[in-house]
View (spheres, rainbow, N blue to C red):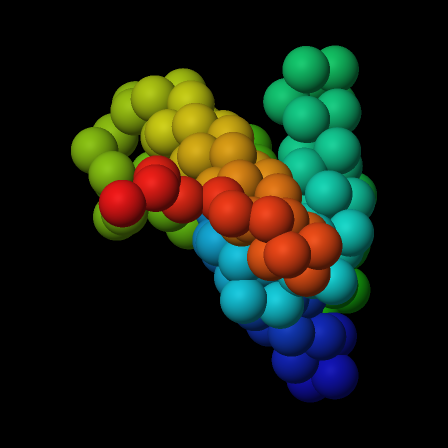
Length: 130
């Protein structure tokens, strides 16, 4: 029983980490210190995608499921829980590209806002003159 609960907790935390990956840079627009946590998640995801090794969080969930007497799913978390539900079957590579594009957009906005905040603190004009 406890292993099944632990597996479900890991599954939910994994989902939260993926959601934070997509929206974290946008949240950092409001709370700038979040950018460091987000950067760690981005690096983590980049390594997993580029090196193409299994995610340890997925392995942890599967371990708990096996220990709890459940059968484990084939493939990764994204393919099992999100593919075919959040986007059409087989569109995971496109979804990954969209996710990384959102990260880039979030970081561009973050750095623009940080530049404007610093300029404002220095008393510089950052907008167009009228």
